[in-house]
Image (cartoon, rainbow over all chains, first blue to last red; front, side, top):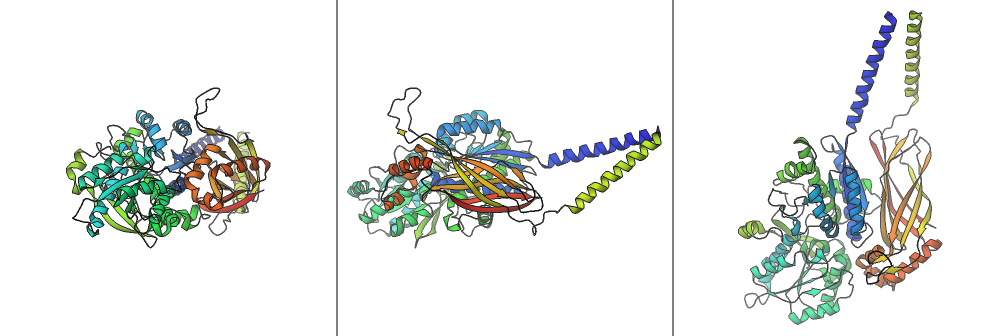
Length: 415
Length: 198
């Protein structure tokens, strides 16, 4: 009888220990699902692929550094080929997988999904930086780490006005002349047009006729000849890199005589490669440092790129990798804050995560990040670069918020 | 009787414990020094599904459904051998690679399905890469314009060549910048690979 009791007790003790050990190992393996929609095959794959690599590498970094308060992130990353129906299908999968947030991509998927993610209260951190997504009254769950296209466009034209126009031979004699070059039908390209023309009026430009240049263009001579009729001093380019390079090349060959400013998706390491000497002096917006630049956190970006994608030479990597990191780092911070503050519901991630960030520094040469319950513009300071000897050099950090505080606060949000 | 049963139970526990500790003694523990990178090679590529070469713009009224810009899909399956040269099992966490038709990168494919590869064994993994004429057209037009011009061709000519030639295995398909992530006891190894088929 004594032996039987003893055996039972030993069994109970071992069973209890086994249960505790088993469950503690399960607790250690806790994970959080995050979805990522990327374009690695479609119309924006030239930059989308590099951005997607950056996302995956940054998630490795997050998991190597404790994840979300000890919970590892499981990344479900899919290519949607820039096809909206596929983006919608993948979104439904992310919901089924109980993803706490989604790392999205371009204007197409972001705008198509915006009403749904707002209804479902799922944070959607994307690489579409349209100012239309910065007003939390309309799109509370759309977020990104970068300054928006409209803020960027205002800053770029202001930097040219500050730094280049005073050196022009006609300075003080007439108004500077300005026009835009972009694909009219593209939502990404046209997003900041109203803002940049508003800024041109504020600064006293004469505004010429817009020129429609396809994203597919490799010959833009007819548009450049049309520009010549207006004799612009400055052209703003809203397209992506290849067609911007084509326009800059044709402008150089046809002697347009204007300076150029470029939105961020047309301004990367491939522009000087494609446009050659025609790209000298071209100014543009970079929402963070270029790949490999000497800024905080860049050592990690480069280390993880080498570690996880050693087959891709460093010279093929772009600023898009760094942009992917930027979005992951703000999401990581929001998840950690929300997790500590009560849980990872979408609303909690937004309210106790993102909207508690005040001058949160992610490094990467990006502006410190701010989100409030009434304003999702991350910053009012935008660095403007210029290409010199094929390299990117900073020209000016334009502080729109300090320079036009009333307009910034009362007029410019959300467009 | 009870005493005998108790002694037998104790003996069994001792024997099992001895066996387990013996096994543990002979098992190799992964370390940074002994963790060899597994070897990834392309075994073959299959044209899993081919639908010919065609393209309809959204100006064309379909028999059923809504008009759209649509082109023929092409589904390629890449079969890789994953060889584990270690004396312990390793876990493959993900595998990704770029697919290029001739010199044009058209797809970057990733598989995040995890798999365990036993010590000294070779597993196979099949990864599908989906293409269609529409998205490859856009990719070529937005990114490959200068390259196509330098080659003296255009996007449509290239697409027709690929969509008719690849199902015949007449056009080489390149696997580029491949990387597979392996884990063993918290340690990480990344294997690179590239290949051309046929």
